[in-house]
Image (cartoon, rainbow over all chains, first blue to last red; front, side, top):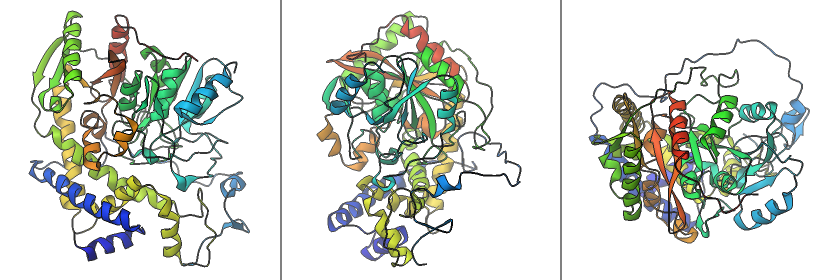
Length: 90
Length: 428
């Protein structure tokens, strides 16, 4: 992976690495991707991807409004303004 | 608790609890891995990014244990978000009670140590690629990972949703069975959790997969052969077989788990919960990037790799292919286990020293999961049980069966326990 591609990846990841982290992770990525490439040899025929290891029925809850009395607990530990979470500029 | 002081003193040395419940009672105690929510107790999942996060609710498994009269005793330490095999990828490293210079395994390191030092206790832990079997083996306890989807993941701080399984550690299969029957079963808060019946289809044949025996420590290999001879003496038939591509379970597992982890970790934004930044004048991307600086090295490595393998240009080559390899191996293993259990040592090495484990290059560390990854990748139930002690350290074997045949594993270990006494250094 070239430097430019690695930098683009870090930007997508929203990660800022120190110089030593950058050197180590860039080298690790190269080695690990080489290892990942070994699955190319596996003949998987016409098998479909297994998104789950066990068949999941995908039961969904009924879509209806339920009362919830604990919004104060959910907001505890965050900065709030009028029951809204305060966040950075978008 | 009468011996609370002793437990706290030992915890100062072995670092198995990140928090202790001072008001816990003596009997029927249970601990909870730090990535599972307990109301009122900080849940960090071993990460600095969740510092200060105190859940306002109990995970379903915790709520069910408490309703049946079990007493919550403490949160157990772990590798950050489960990213590790030795318990060293976090700020506080648990120590093995059999040799304090050695690791307790990972990622459920604290759960295994707590089980090895406490009596009348059961540990609720979690496995993604081997995080129950591995530390259970290193610490000489029974570690049970149920079929994927049998225990609700509501209240679990996720690592990789299609691989995460809440399971149990204890000093006997009987204690595990009791707790398993309490925590399993459908849950309206987890739509992937199933009500499927659990079976007890006993097998008299044990299959050893040749490819899994490569790279195992000589001492462990010799000891494992002696175990097989004992099991033959107990009436089991042992067969050796080859299973193509079983070695590809490791890269397939790491591709899928890193892909899922890289998306899951995106929810730690620095203002909703856990670590709080107050630099609100910064733009979102800058703010978000700053919040993520506290991730450990392994977490950063997995975010980079997981993000890459999901990229549109390479997704088919890595992520989709890995999902197909999972389908292939699930089919092959299920076919192989129609009339047999698969058995192997749990770990290819003895518990390493803490400083040695911390220095292992990533690929070498990942290779240590060669025996625990196949059943985890494919959601198959498995159990690790102690079967020998080499130079004073416990050694575990791992038994695997078909989906939902979980009781058969516990039945097998129950029979084994009648002929073998587990050793514990502490009984607090």
